[in-house]
Image (cartoon, rainbow, N blue to C red):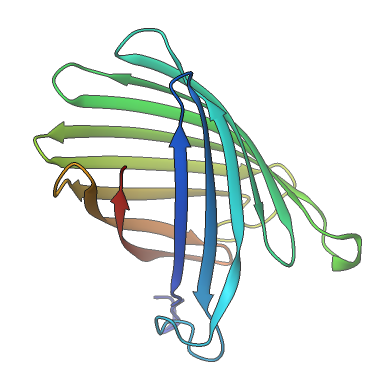
Length: 202
């Protein structure tokens, strides 16, 4: 909240992904959001919110350490974002794991949009723990625009914090919930973001 002002919205997404035995992986994601005058109401005036596709290749040095270069493309009606990235992860034998990723986000607008392209350097860090059927994970995100685009409190950089908890019901189903703390581009306050979902593994 900032001076009685709050940002509320509801969005949904469906993602399908697969990784082959040789380490090559891909994913396809479709997105929707609530439109109209009541964007915080789930499925109110349901409209498209773009799509995202990715390819990656995971190299495993051993059973604990992996390196994964990848490339994502996110698009909607107003712009496209190109996201080359590199992720490294180390998983300890006791269930604890740490990971880090660098991603370069290049946002390109159509010539008639009247907006300049944006370039963002983004870093993610994860720390997680798997115990039995439960998994908990902390995520920190730092992103900075090299073009001076406002990301939080009228500044060109932003920080984000997320806590995710997942439970494996069986070999296929795993519901999860996520609590996030994110910035607002033109104000100094922070916003709380809730996510819930379910993953199905074949």
